[in-house]
Length: 251
Ligand code: C5P
Image (tube, rainbow, N blue to C red; front, top):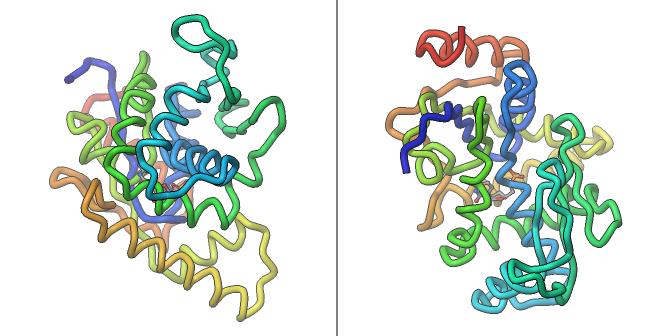
């Protein structure tokens, strides 16, 4: 499974800043970007949309592999046909890249805000606990490893998906810092009550993501841990770039 295409993995808990940092690095380097959380969010969106039962792993697998198609539009694949050229029964989900600000379309509608919202976040963390569903998404993630390189953001990028990555980062930040970042992301009013609410839902998701049996969010043994609580985005990016230079991944 080893490949010559360079990969920087950036794992961490929710709102640790990994998405922002991964985005900035991929733009600086002109490398591809994998936002793996978005794939779990998309599956959660579909589960919700089709009113499926979360325990019906077989049905969800069938839905994701046979009934709908999840595609990256920047790869130019937008056909609503399955691998054998038959029309897909239920539709196509498209991830568009627009300069790495990934947007999501479902049957032509922009559903990015719904997919990024709190409701789907919670559902995604439950979907992501299923080994069967995780396995379905493995090739979708690995196919993004193309020249000149990939920056991969998630929970298990360094441990499961790209264990041979040349540089693995595990980004940390205090729960309070992460709650504040998440509030800014959601455009939530800065009241004590909304802060408590966001902090609590973050901690619930942390618990689910780091304690689950399959692919828990944890640093790979060879990952570099960076605490970004006191660092700006630029400082964090600079630190990762220095590490990539030291490892001769970039000049
Ligand atoms: O990173 P993001 O918050 O968008 O991820 C949504 C959810 O998807 C996470 O809470 C986590 O449960 C799941 N996830 C995962 N493995 C990844 C990325 C995300 O389990 N590599």
